[in-house]
Length: 82
Image (cartoon, rainbow, N blue to C red; front, side, top):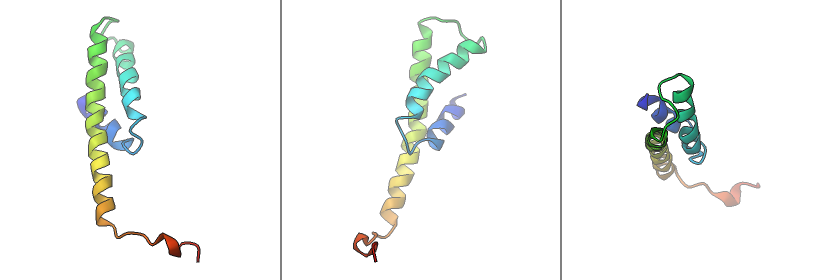
């Protein structure tokens, strides 16, 4: 299931504030809903690991964005209104 959380971070990585809380809340809810875990303190650890995995995807997405911005030539903003 780790790849699914990394994929979530990759897909929504432009808006980093969205996948992290989604992973922190959604993953434990999913684990309880499908009967994998009961409501125990271990769910906090599962939520933490979900955030770490989603963070990896967000970091990769952000790294790709920053690399592409460096490779792109600068935009002349003064010529935009002409």
